[in-house]
Length: 305
Image (cartoon, rainbow, N blue to C red):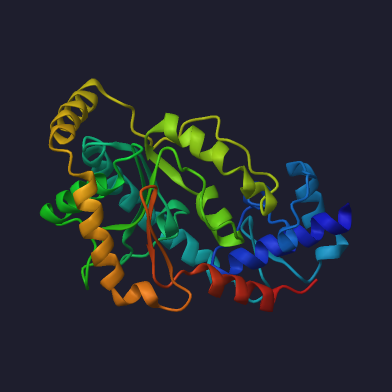
């Protein structure tokens, strides 16, 4: 057991070292990586993790300073994390304000912050990665309205306009909450997800993605609400219901699906090798150059126990 825990701790520190992210002992425990994704059922206490960090098996393999653990020789990550946390905190507050507006749009059931901002590791030039969940059967109309709205207010990422703009590359419906790619990077990405709106849907999202435990055995559904989560307000609900009534009257879903599917098929990024593109009535995913495979390759190179 001690050998396995030490191996998992080293895997955790190494994986997040690839992401330039030193960890506290609590974070190592919370985000503990099951080496090789073996789906083990064993869990450990925070005390056991701290004890293993101080044990002989990890001597010389992990360094620690100011309460943060990292790979030897990577002390520069300490100041980097502090800088990026400050930057991310400001951006997340602005992202929350934008989510408040998006939550009023028809069929939006959940908004989650993902990517570097969710782990408070964004840079000054970072965009705002979002996962948006729509009502079942309304993904094409929902995506269209959200895209047009954000473009109109100058908050949609496109072309060279990146900084502080919403990156709309992951849409799913409330009847399809399970993430398609079940690798270590996805487990990391959605373990860090910050629910900005739609707590009931977020609860079901976590339950639908229990596979995360294969890579992160300490994963468990969130009990306390995140401080950035927006409560549903009467005004928001009234606006959304009114807009949905109007949208239902026009019944544009099938027409918009046909137009957007044709446009996606013509996009050269759709055919890129290694791209992750999904265009269906339950998921619209646009990741022409997914980061996960590269991160995992670097992790395997650095992982030595």
